[in-house]
Structure formats: structure tokens, C-alpha cells
Length: 304
Image (cartoon, rainbow, N blue to C red):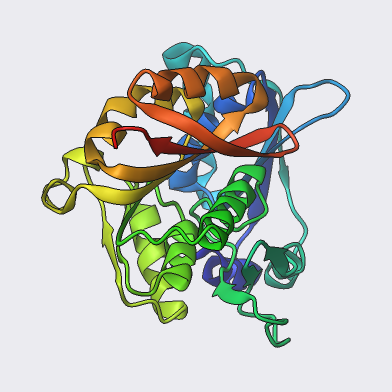
């Protein structure tokens, strides 16, 4: 069940909000990812004054003990300090309508991204993508996702034509579907280790009538299908900078000699670290896109 379906049922349950502060965005992402197994919705943002990262989650009151136990485990098990915690009951409201209104349509590069509640026609020659708010990352609002969509649009404008594409860590599947809209003849794999992301991506592919994406779960680059289908002409990885550095050898081994990679989930302070790691494996920086503090890299193999 996706988030919008869950929210439609909230008039029958008691909804509770938990919010607190953590020291870094990576901690915020990690905390909300762990809490997602017991929550309805998760978000995080940086307070501009304190520079602390604020996390906020909604969950049903019946899951209060489970969420509280998870929260209590972070400092002891993961050495993540959660400060100023607050748990409050929320008044009964039309959460579905409010959630939909918080996600207006977006025009990003060659794409028009909108929720299924939007009835307006797609403007101009933009490619439509229906993405409802859900339990998997990737609605187009985050700087890293926007950067990847712009990078895909740029490669298309540069007449780059990949025949095989891998979206590693696909989240909602928005980037794999965007690639499918740009290159309808390409063979595309969308992969994520999170079963919820796999489920949401499959649903989004059906919603957008995208039929030529194979959605995989499991063990990343060691998946038998991925091993059998490599090399890929284009690999997209919108994850975290530290993870991107960890998997650089896997990406290089799965990339064709004339291939390109789109890397995101990178803070501007981490750009040099990621660029250097990939340069050591024969990939050169072709271009980068910065949105706020987030950087998306386009790198290409120099093995020709």
C-alpha cells in the first residue's frame, strides 16, 4: 500500500508525530530509513539557523511502542544522538488532501512530474511522469533527484544514446522511468535493496505505462540478472557520497568502455572526494549540476 492509500485511512486511526534533531543529513536519512518500517511518512530538512537536521515522522498510535523502541536504539547501537525529541498526537484532518497539495507539479529539464490528483494537461513538449508521494525516496523535490533529472536531460540533448541503462538504488523508480521516456529503445534495469522501493517502483511503472524496465531487488551489483546484462552504457546512482565511493569498483566493472555515469546524493563539500575516487578508476568528470548544497556528477569512461 503506498502512502496516499495509507493517508486515506487516517480518519480511522490516531496519528502521532515524532520530531527531533540530529547532527548531520546522513544521520537524518539513516534514522528515517530505519523508522520507515513502522511509520506512515518521513521527512528531514536542515534548520538554517541552528544548522541541525530536523527529522519528522508520522505513525499510527498503535505503533508507538515500536517507534519508541527504535528511537531508543539509535544512540546505543549506532552512536547517533537524537536531541529535543517530541511525540505529539495530531488532530484529525484531511491528510491526503494536505499531502497532495504539498507536492505541486514540477517542470525539471525535459520532464513534467505530477501527482495523480493533478488534472491539468502536460505543458508543451515535456515528458510526463506521475509520481505520488509514497514510502520510497524520489518525488523530484530533492536537489539530488532534480540534479539527476537535469543530467538525464542534458545527455539526451547531447545526443547520447545508451542502449542499456542501470538505475542502482532506484527508490521510487523516477530516474529509471525518466530514462525510459528519453530512450524508449533502451534496456533498463531498476534495482534497490529495499523491498519497499522495489514494490513502489513496480507500481509507478504500471501507473506510467512504462513496460521496458526490469525491477530487481536483492544484492546490488551481485544480482545474477545485472551480472548477465552488463556492461551498461549508462549507470545512475543517486545514493550517498560515502556509498558511491564504496561501490566505485562495482560501477566501473559494470560500465561499458564508452559509458557514462550519473552520480548524486553528494553534498558540495563531498564533490572532490567522489570525483577523485572515480578518477582513480578511469572515469573523468564531464559536467556537474549543483542545486543548493547538492551536486550531481556526470562522469564518463576514458577507456576508449
